[in-house]
Image (cartoon, rainbow, N blue to C red; front, side):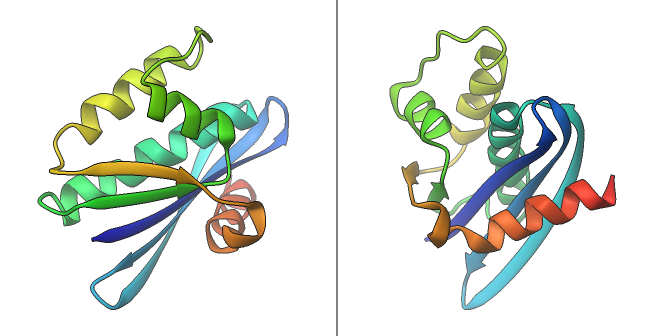
Length: 129
């Protein structure tokens, strides 16, 4: 099982945004930062999941994925497979499509303090913009 921690951050809301992805896989840890341009904080959170799924499709296509996020909005939308927010709907659809290629994919909410690696990487991405 691959553990994937994701976080999005924005400087302003909307503002310059970044995504952080921290992966624990097969005894190793991997870090990724992605500048995202101008987005809302919640859009950045969804984009972090999308970026992480892209990485996992390339590196771990046959693995079970356990995602963790400190965004209750993202976790609820993914678990329910639905969001009323029109801005988030295409992002959720992209996540559902990418996640469907894995044998098992799930996401759970974690508190901010347990997501410090991904948070640091998301903030780092803002400075890379």
